[in-house]
Length: 117
Image (cartoon, rainbow, N blue to C red; front, side, top):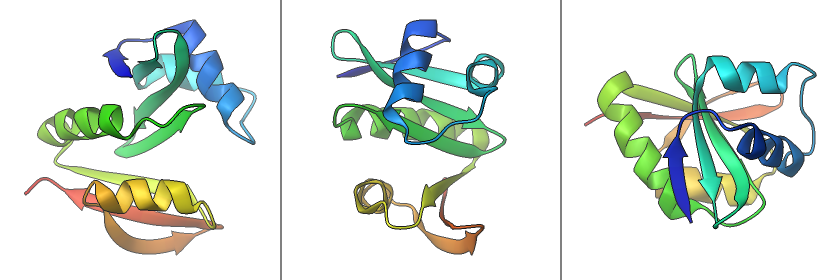
């Protein structure tokens, strides 16, 4: 699996389809934010960094690709938050494995945070 920076409609659609719920303006938000498509070799999802928050959605395991994007993003942003739906144990394991630590709970989401150290 590889992550490629830059908006791709096919990757954004794959990301949207891998999520259980999404907003009607999801594709538009992907275009405006920092977007990384996930490919294996076809589009399987994406990573969006928007307002210091990272959102990951993929139909395939993508930990190594996310690790690469997180490292690059922390250089530019200094800090990232990862809002994760409560009960999403896979996402929580990925976040903690990437060095994110619990920060707080907001509106049914558990928010993890990592600072560039």
